[in-house]
Amino acid sequence: MSAPLSFLFRPGRAAWLFATATCWLTLLMAILLLRQVLAEGPISYPMGSWPVPWGIEYRVDILNAYMLVLVAAISAVVMSFAQLIVERRIRLPEHKQPWFYTAYLLCMTGLLGITITGDAFNVFVFLEISSLSSYVLISIGRDRRALTAAYQYLIMGTIGATFILISIGLMYVMTGTLNMADLAARLPAVAHTRTIHAAFAFLTVGVGLKLALFPLHLWLPNAYAYAPSVVTAFLAATATKVAIYVLLRFFFTIFGPQFSFETMPLDLILLPLALIGVFSASLVAIFQDNIKRMLAYSSVAQIGYMILGISFVSVTGLTASISHLFNHALMKGTLFMALGCVSFRIGSTQLERMAGLGQSMPWTMGAFVIGGLSLIGVPLTAGFISKWYLILGALEKGWWPVAVLILLTSLMAVIYIWRVVEVAYFKPAPEGQIVREAPLALLIPTWTLALANLYFGLETSFNAGVARQAAEMLLGVAP
Amino acid sequence: MQILGLYNYWIFIVLMMCGFYVVISRGNLVKKLVGLNIFQTSVFILYISMGKIFGGTAPIVINQPDVVYSNPIPHVLILTAIVVGIATTSLGLALVVRINEAYGTIEEDEIHAQDQEEAL
Image 1 (cartoon, each protein chain N blue to C red):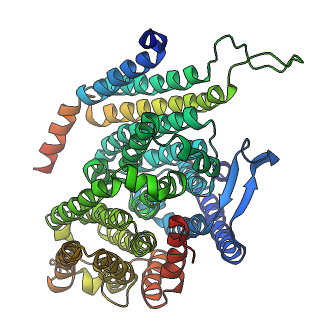
Image 2 (image 1 turned 120 degrees about the vertical axis):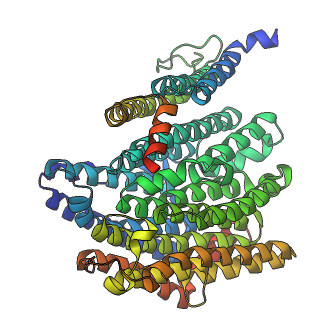
Image 3 (image 1 turned 180 degrees about the horizontal axis):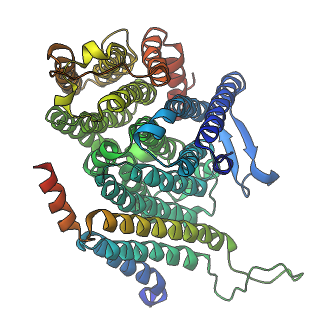
């Protein structure tokens, strides 16, 4: 992983080129890895050639390979987008620009590391690598409130990470191993003890803090709203997703679904939290005037959907969660990058400033609309697929009120996306305001993601198909 | 007797709760960081005490088969966690310095008040 190298490149541009090349290469490797896993089954790679239960193992199965592709793809696209923003909007001095890319690459390393590792303690280490660098990235925002937002995130994130650390410690005490596969094999023997119950609770709360599960989401709106738009696009599309991956990995692979959902009544806790989260966050989003903040609240709501899928504990529910991970990354990436283009031209993301942008920046707003449609879950977009599975999952369980609520909250998404569309397309631009279309260097990455939204809405074999295989693997159902 | 025997776990819990309480209750950003530090340190104690075996020596390989030694892995793990703790604290303090430059205060409620004024 070549993060530290990038700061050796003195001029900002060279560092950017290097970082972008790294990201795309990583993506290539991730895709190759996924193909190999799909063809041959899980791959295991012992670090430093120490035999597996003692040494640290990298273990790749369908779920991680899928997540790796997601993280690498988003970071590659967003990185291609970053250069102009860093130079013109954040206005970092030339000699400091390489540091930005260093932090970005470090964050990516951390996220990839969490995903790929097969060692419980390693998860914690990589988690801290990625969160420390994301605090730095958030605090780069030009608004001074970015600083307090980053500080708040630092406090919450550290508490969360420490909870995870306690939980891993307790598990180690009871089993004497840190390897995930080993843990899974040894936990059932001690699963009835209070220590393991405590470990489980600590873990749920800790990861809940990281992924901004509903009552623990307070850090997220500020952090997303005041961070630079590149950073927001990157973090919104990857960081919380990886936290959900950690949750899936621990609940299903390590503790096993039987312990998580039968011994501990996890689904009964997650279900109401997810529903309240979706509902209240969508409601708050409707009343936001800063679009970035609005999308941040909608992220909280979307995380609620993913948790909802997990709480169904069925193959369909999990498929919905996992494919929603992917689709949400696509749509939020598109939306935040389109917003990045907007703020690049008009210097603000306040709703009232966006009047008339539909005419002056048609391509940017076009991408925004596609992202928005996908967020709502209109057919032919990626968002539709995962919502479809989610509702199927709810109906399968016979929980039709849940399905109704999912539809209702989608309607709320219509309202808040519509507010933007209305202002941008139907309000006349203020007198004398001349806004030009965003430069191509920003438009191309944005549209790449926007088109991906459409593509994955039509061609579902990748996101839904692989997600289904991963879900079957997690639940231990023979495919 | 059992309660006394587990005294370092009791210290762990007390310290953890102290730290957590400080983080929640204090408005001063530096004091919050101090609380966070206590909170993290308490977890280090948890890890270190679980590696201890009564009568064990330091885990150094000497060619005597019946030597009882402490489990080194938790200690190694916690070294990593200490490094992480240092990084977190220093980053947090750096942020506090910048907040102080931007707002001229490190009291949470004053910062909040300034933000509110700005919004109006």
